[in-house]
Image (cartoon, rainbow, N blue to C red; front, side):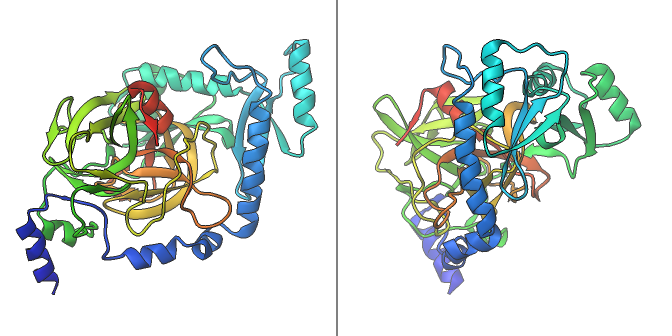
Length: 402
């Protein structure tokens, strides 16, 4: 029966496929409200909802620059959500720091909130300053990734090989700081694209979801096998032109690359903080949806602007399909891409470009706000899924969700 199905798909000439009906019912059950409660228990979800609200209240107290971006005062050490889902606010423990009158007012307001407060030695701004230095520096080959660790009030560097020689090399050649700690990377970090074009039989053997859905339907987290296997992100507009966001690291998806029957790449980046491409589908018989592939429900059109260590996210991709996890490093570097978000969610090669979204604290996980698209992680498959922020993509391309 399977061979007949594969033969039919080949006969129809499907070079492009959207994610699967093969495991749809199983995945939908796994990501139902009941599964969400068992994965993140009721107390965690309830606390997380309150933490997100407290976070918004805190952010409202901080000044904004002329672009409307939040400016963190130097007396803020960081903000993260702990393992119970509670917000933890860190204040810099510096008795010599002189606060202005309005800053003292903010600190008083913060201390009056029903939140957990910790005192640390280094500011949030200092940790991100170190990340900027690391991102701009020429890094040794042993460097695999870097990320801020708010709970540890530091910056973590993943090395492979991991030894005293490589640690000394990094500290001497890149930057030295007492807040930096080193860990052994699980495997070489990489962008999660399978660079070859695979047959349907090969994709099925790899466990990739393939559906006999007509190629004119494009869903977040679906599969595209064009110059390599990768995943679909979210639908977006540039001006009055419609299309979708996917990975920028596929060598076949350079500027103005044409995907037969689908569209043309009109925006592209694989440097700085953006690893993404915008494929313009205007004029093609393509239906763009917000229905998450692999048996998922509708995706929300709001966009996440703040990322906290400990917050809960899910992703949909071609290789490992639907997985979930929490943020481990809210400001991370992967490969040559800066400003990423690193998580403990499972992912693998072929997931690059797939949708990442926030998990709502009530009801099933569908409907969460768009967070970004999968970039990569350590090794072929691992629990180190790292993603590019949708806010960075939309800022670079001037795209907007709908």
